[in-house]
Amino acid sequence: MLKVGLTGNIGSGKSMVARIFETLQVPVFYADQEAKKILDFPEVVTQLEALFGNGIIVNGKADRQALAQIVFADKNRLEQLNSIIHPAVRAGFQTWASTHHNAAYVVYEAAILHESGHYKQMDKVILVVANQKLRTKRVMQRDGLSETLVVQRMANQWPETKKIALSDFIINNNETELLIPQVVKIHAGIANYPT
Image (tube, one colour):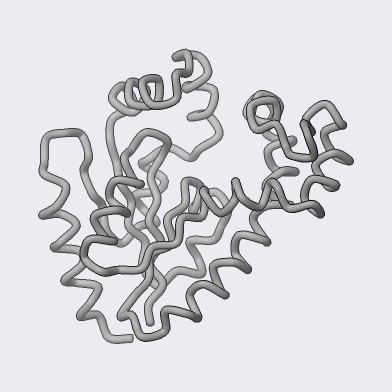
């Protein structure tokens, strides 16, 4: 079974692409959703409180908005958070992947696959790209964030050009090409790739 990373900068549409893979019966692990669940684990809450103070804990759970304001404004704080979350997400993926051993491949969908270095553990990497103006507009509409906050979050991700060089497949989501044919073509190539 191959492990295929699926990534793209914020607002690129990688989650939409992941859902297309699911319609093709490909198991998809959503790392960012898993990370949100992990934030509520009691042992993680204790670590977060020790690192960021009890002001980010509300009713025994992490206040995601307060945490986001801290970490997206300070790369060192973001790295501290990632050092807690990433190992737990990766362990969860390994367990999950072992339950899908009959699949030709599984998809690991994650926003910062390259930045975390986890792309090195993938057999193939798919990158979803879109221009920054379009990505900014999408995130502002989706999350109700100001342009300043969106740009601040984008600054914590590598530029697409750097990610393109480390990816095996590129999906263009600039609304100039249909997504489904691009995904189907990649799916056909990966499904027939020797394991």
